[in-house]
Length: 119
Image (cartoon, rainbow, N blue to C red):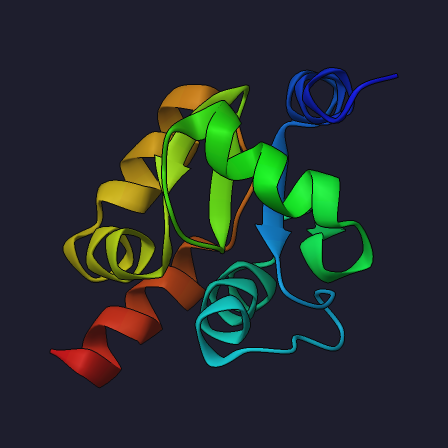
């Protein structure tokens, strides 16, 4: 199976996927840590793919999304964005709306606490 096929399979068979450096329990870069931290704090169930474990996946995900950086978040098969975009969406409430529209469970109180702490 090619890297592109593996990526497509992962993105389409999981509701939420984070392609990141490291894992959700042990991120290996600050940007990956921030996005995984938001998802973990919100209680979102998500698959994590450590791009450091496979150079073909690391380059393949950049080609798949036509996005040059890691981490990359996918929700219900759609590319959402990287660290800056996810941070902005979290603070604006857009991430809540996306999860609501896509039927992804998350802790609304936790989302509100993030905004209160950063407001």
